[in-house]
Image (cartoon, rainbow, N blue to C red; front, side):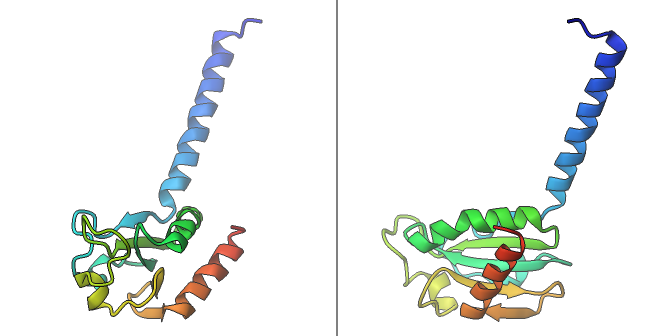
Length: 147
């Protein structure tokens, strides 16, 4: 069955508009940022990574931490559903370190004793929760988003 040129153009126009709107809604959602790529395990100031006008969820993690790896996809999905949230992931492991790098400058700076360790900041950059309370808030947000 042949489609007339006018109809085909109309269909292409509507498909293009739909894709553009869908992509725009995805871009509006909060991103997941690798906050210390190229400087893994090195000390840094978290406040420099906060997203203005958004909640910022900071996730201290290690590639050797199984719970960290399990919650990462949930964080990514949560960030994709909330335009008011940015997730900043901070790898505590220095390059070449096997196992969780508890002696890294980053782990030492923030006195990390367990990971994943979450810290949540409000839209004005004020710390709302850290540790278990932050994890509980993350779980609540994930449930609210149906994740």
